[in-house]
Image 1 (cartoon, one colour):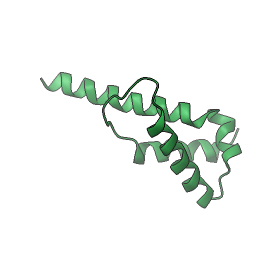
Image 2 (cartoon, rainbow, N blue to C red):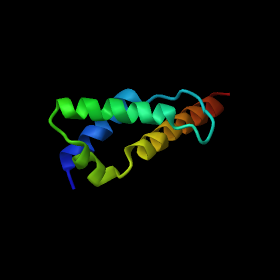
Image 3 (cartoon, one colour):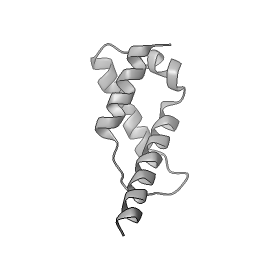
Image 4 (cartoon, one colour):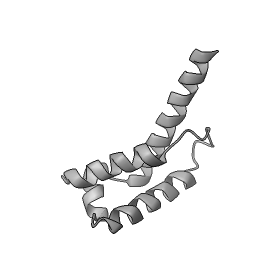
Length: 82
């Protein structure tokens, strides 16, 4: 397990993933773009794709979950305010 890889991804997620609305369930294009961007940023810090995948497995799936979590949190906030 790579703690620095895990910490990097969690920080990257908190800085880059925002609620953007729900798309088609089978469309992972945004998640794939986020995964590519995250891996590129990690590489600049000397963190390899392998280090990240040790902790997260398929990064696209992890990004997809993070997008859904952000959308769910925003929906709950909107429901509470109404």
